[in-house]
Length: 250
Image (cartoon, rainbow, N blue to C red; front, side):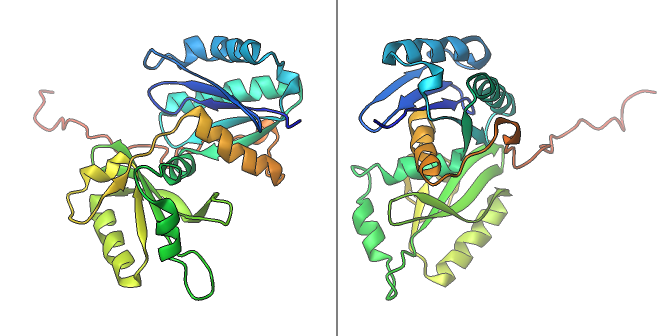
């Protein structure tokens, strides 16, 4: 029997928790916005009771490291670390952007993923589809990354995750077009980019997709000690506009 993975998602507006094993998934999401600190632990306890398992029965604890809400990321990591220490469990670190790509790749009703992948396999049998994921950060800033899918459909990062603006996106689109890559645009944030020819696959992050990514990592021994969980803010300091004091009285 496969041990379940407990997954925590706190980077978005609503926190969620999932308990996933080989055969079934228990899932719960908060109805209240930004209630992570108030509801996360009780939701975890409720889910464990619903599944009739204890924390010690789990294989690992997975947590979304971001990018996303800075406060939410810190809450999720703190809870994951505390639970993992208490039950002597390993942890699995998951990227929000990676989970979004996995979510998009599973939306077969929205896009024929199998056909997309087949159409982009080169003569060497290597999939050259680029899954370009975009998540709005603030104003004209976006979290961005390129992923490819391996033979199991697992999202593999190409390059690095970063923060870019509208000008950067336009430059990337021109470069991608020159390379002739087949691109799948992931995330509703692409709707903010006013350029023709972009049809994005909707994607969201919740504890279910976090758990699915974590299962792959756990099965391939890609785990971390709780102390090694580090937030993935991508940008530690947003450049907020400040009001000039030049015309203020002394």
